[in-house]
Length: 94
Image 1 (cartoon, helix red, strand yellow):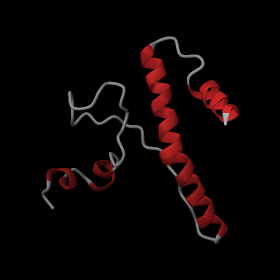
Image 2 (cartoon, one colour):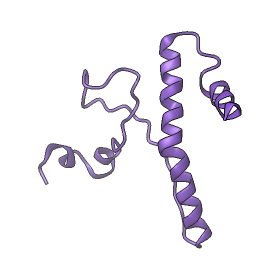
Image 3 (cartoon, helix red, strand yellow):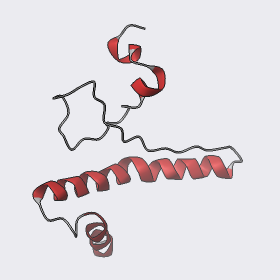
């Protein structure tokens, strides 16, 4: 386990020069562990079953909610819904 911790530290935090960079590295690590890695595994299963697989990472910061999200947040989980389907899904106008 210490090799894993050392590897994660080296990948995400080692070059951090400020508390904000440590925070950003930890957020990236958590995002990878809880979202990216499991998603890649599921995509591999679908691919191995002969299905086409498409994978994306949405990082566009919305200008719709200024002051609601901290400046370091690029896009929250599900933030792409407004861009894919339109704002009515966010406004409850459906």
